[in-house]
Image (cartoon, rainbow, N blue to C red; front, side):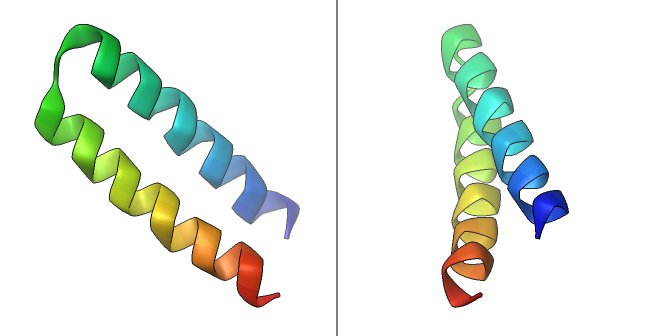
Length: 44
């Protein structure tokens, strides 16, 4: 479970960086990844 939380936090950090740089497509991809890991975390 710790690994999933790390992946979620890494995607969150990446999303923030992409938003700062104006990379909207990459930002949206990171949000989708975060949503995937969030569902996994909530299910367990």
